[in-house]
Length: 442
Image (tube, rainbow, N blue to C red; front, side, top):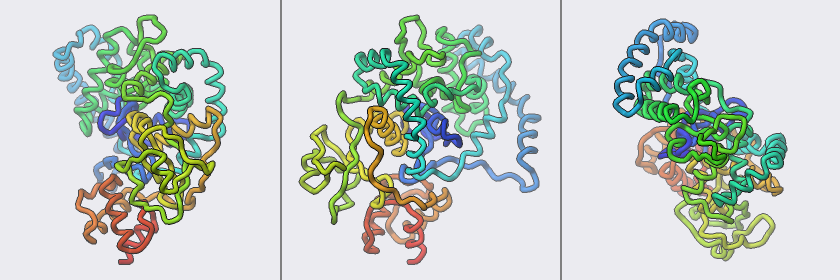
């Protein structure tokens, strides 16, 4: 969920290696996570500090385990006082921390996030794969009544809720089996994002204290994302609901009712507009002004139609509300007209690729077609270091006045466009290999 407060996600923690867990491991949920596709903004993931070359990875882990446990135990003793001061009872704390140990595997995963990001077409191939579509339609049939009831109560399209479920945990198949208290305690002790994870740990203890779940059943991802739709503890506290009426907000059990309703409640609370699409694939006219393809430029679909923008069926897009044009792969890939509901899904995860993945999967679950445009396949994503190199070159050329962080945000995209205009190429703002080559050739 958003790098700001992506309620359920941790704006940028992880990118899954497994297709089945693509979403669940991208960022801790509804939390902020790392951007999924190059155009979405780069991961900005902090890299591990360099270690002596002669010290192998196995030795590093062994050293962590052999030297850190005593310090970790002392940290728990100190944290206990802070937790009790925040309203956690001694009984809750001691029960929750029984058997908790420093988990070096959690730190290993945190330290070894890939510096590369998937290209959006590769991400969407997985997000809306034939298997995910087939399993999603089965889930809609199996849980149709509860999804209808959830849609009726919260006004959020059941196909969108199902799509979030599909991306976050493959419809409940991959909910994570790491003890959340242990994972969050390890990350809080580690200190790299200590304040954030300690706050999540306090919220996790509050969840245990409320009686919603026993510590042994509070499992999730290595970064603390939990349940069918991967809520982080703070998002759970703010948005989880008891849809079944059993007195517990249970997002962990095999019954997904509370988790799906909590996701709908989350989207509703962030402004979901009933009946409005997340976006529509469109075609752009020859000579389109690519400077208009940015989130700040909003027009009614009828006004976009007057400029030659059409749906892929050749017809003007209905007036669903103010919309922007999004080019997630630059001028060579698909174009989308996106509406406010795009920004609502974005609160779950800030990456454009994730939002398009949820939106497109929801369309396919509803019976809609695959994306019609072709993608510029064959490009490999720019590495983190390449993105920083690109920013340095844009800065030296006088097009960028911002920090060099490898994150492709609005300022970098605008700088790319300015450079492209100056060089007489299509100003689509896309950070491609060709762009970097062009910068190196000046």
